[in-house]
Image (cartoon, rainbow, N blue to C red):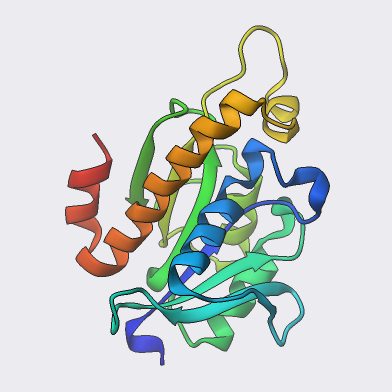
Length: 194
């Protein structure tokens, strides 16, 4: 199974209190991908993540295992490492979708490898995998205006207008994941990193 499988993990925090926050855009991108694949979330055997397994349409498209850790974002490493082990997938076949304060709110960047840039979810994954050599879909959420703390900004519910804008942004980020699985890194970077 491992050869053609991509493990795509959306980072976020579990529970309804976090559902409409910027910090949960990784979950939301994976929710949209699951919808496109016609799949439903189920609890993984490890009980540390929810997963959807399937192929991207049109069939037979690339095989994806979508994952959402059931832990808080800062503790994502263990569940992600467990998914890679279970599906016998190398870190190079991992795509982590996460919020990025240092990118404008309407941008996406696709990259392979690198540091965690202060993102605790990425730090946890890098620590558990003992490598940073995995793909990232960096979902730009922008920085807070004024003196609002970044922690309050990423965890506060979004306004109605921000939610509408985020829905369009989530579509584009899901498209970037699909492009990465279908066309590879270089072509996806050309199309999405501008």
